[in-house]
Image (tube, rainbow, N blue to C red; front, side):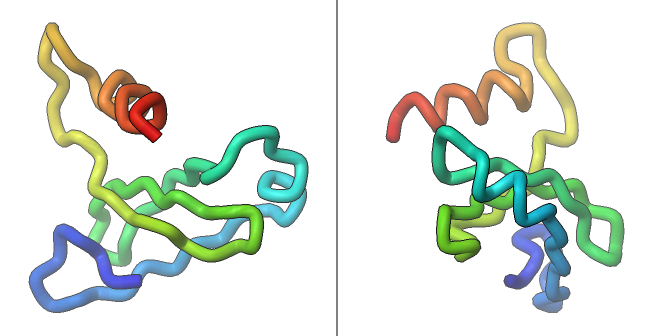
Length: 78
């Protein structure tokens, strides 16, 4: 998939151990990765190893909401 932060459509290579996906009790599995230009990203991978979404991580954290809290809120909304 293309990096959502790069304007030129830089492709992101995502590598994940097969066991991480197969042994997960909840889907999609969240996998941290980076594009070749260094943008920190999280990918959401389903049980069939399909990438459902890829999002940039927060660049800064506020006192009210951290990047981890944002992801948890997003997962709880599913």
